[in-house]
Length: 128
Image 1 (cartoon, rainbow, N blue to C red):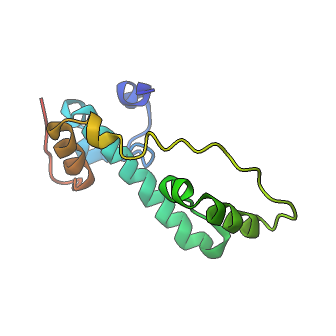
Image 2 (image 1 turned 135 degrees about the horizontal axis):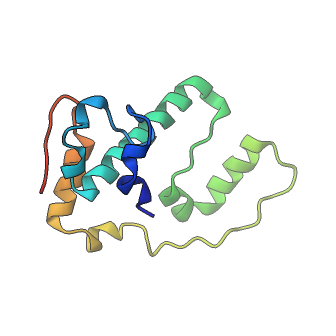
Image 3 (image 1 turned 180 degrees about the vertical axis):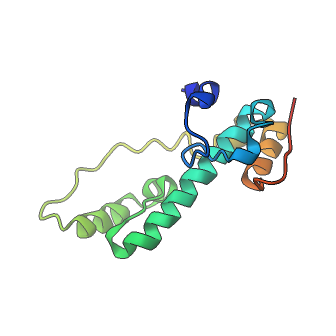
C-alpha cells in the first residue's frame, strides 16, 4: 500500500499526486511516513478543491462520515445529482473505521501529520 513512498524517486518531480516539490528533494527521504502521507492527502485535497472550482455544480463531493451518519439523505442527493430514475440500493456502511486514527496513531505520528499538513515547500523540516 505504501509502495508510492518507497518508489517516489521513479516518478516525475514536482509531483502533484504525492505533493512533492523540487525544494523538498534533498530531505524528502528523511521525512516520517506519517508526514509523507499527510503531504499526499494535502495534495489530493488541493486537487479536489481545484476540481470543485472548475466543475462547480457538476461535481458532487461525499464525505464518508456524512454518508455514514446520514445515509438516506446522502443517497437521495446522489440520486438527484445523477438524475437517476430508480433509487440507489442501500450500501453497507462500516462505521468502525471512523475516528479510528485517534486510537491507533501515537502522539508523535499525529504531530508528524500536522507538520505535513502545515508544510511550506520552502521550509525543510525532517524527522529521523
